[in-house]
Length: 208
Image (cartoon, rainbow, N blue to C red; front, side):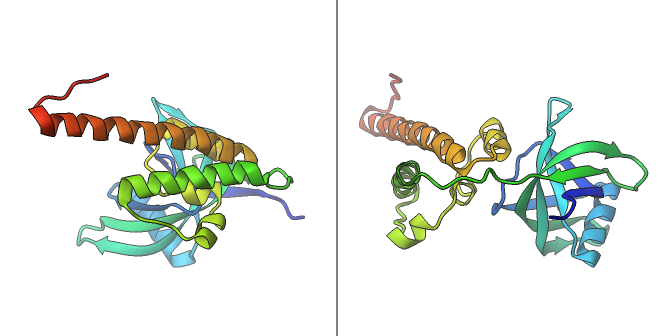
């Protein structure tokens, strides 16, 4: 097994968390990040999105590859669509490059079998949430093939929940956390729908 550490890995600190398999549009306008993205485009290299939360850079981030350039402006600003690939831990910052970079270590998954009941619970609730929010129904085969990251990448969770999912190195643990998050999201949708029904009935929204 080769060394999982990589020096000079480009970093993009942002107020968001990216997950493996998630598609994220990025607007790039600062010179150092334009330089970084252009380098990644030329070399077909990955870069890392790390959550910058209240001036604290989280130690675990998600490597991303650039899928395509959506827009390029005359002044060099550009919008790119990136896709999360793999999880890393930031070991050391490096300041000698013209953009933020560091020594990173790519993290392995815990070697364990997937618990069928845990997966079934998460998939069932995800299907319910998807149908309730979008009226879309997934086939059994498509649903069963979705990992925790695949499901989480399509739901707008808060950054804290996404960071927790990113840092878990067990698929079973991620599925258990998603089960809790999906239940909470379904309840929130139901409450919103009830409030809307009341508003349509009498022009007022009553909470509780």
